[in-house]
Amino acid sequence: MNTLIAPSVLAADFANLQRDIEMINNSQADWFHIDIMDGVFVPNISFGMPVLEAITRHAKKTIDVHLMIVDPNRYIKTFADLGANNLTVHYEACPHLHRTLQAIKAEGMKAGVAINPHTNIDLLEDIINDIDLVCIMSVNPGFGGQSFIENTYTKIKKLKDLITRKNASTLIEIDGGVSDKNALQLKEAGADVLVAGNFVFRSENPTQTIVDLKTLLQ
Ligand code: DX5
Ligand code: ZN
Image (cartoon, rainbow, N blue to C red; front, side, top):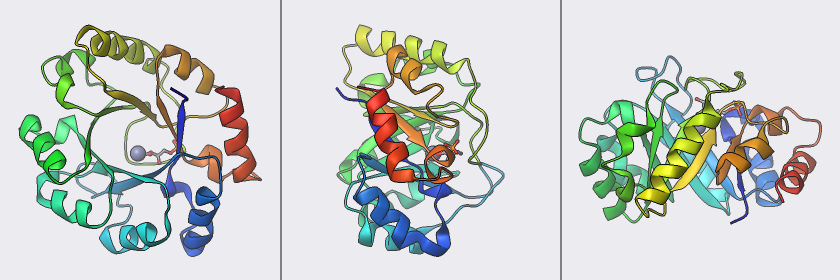
């Protein structure tokens, strides 16, 4: 499978959101990555349902929603109704993860699990076959523009081994500090989807930056 690129809308210019959404629509990017933060699970608040509704009205690619919120069960149906295709919850925020994943799938979405940098891959052993996507956080969640944590490569390899051993079809997504400096190494370690926020949106020509990332990953 080609490595997918998911620009993180958190790094877009919110005063020109439609322009930035159209840029992704017309680019070689594969998914829209949407970060929802509640100021409780993470020390920051991003945006909520009205903004997501505005995004999905224009976005023409897979909507990959990353919930950094406590008790995400409260909003599963809401996010499905808003047009999310993938709904990712945090391992650390879900005491009944198996039930949460089934509820996400029952709403017709792909079920994702994000893990913080300190969370061990071994904890996914008994749930991996129920997960469509594991999002390995390569920064501490809450903010864009942070530096990439190098231990991520080891975690990717360990997760890839687990997926193979359990004969699962789970995708591996990497989120935080992704750039042209680490993209190829992440792919080689086993990543399927790379989220990129600041690297794309703070570049001079975001469309070309996405082309360059895709070329690098071929
Ligand atoms: C961090 C978010 C990331 C962030 C990535 O909490 O989950 O998706 O937007 O941004 P960069 O690529 O700038 O690290
Ligand atoms: Zn994210």
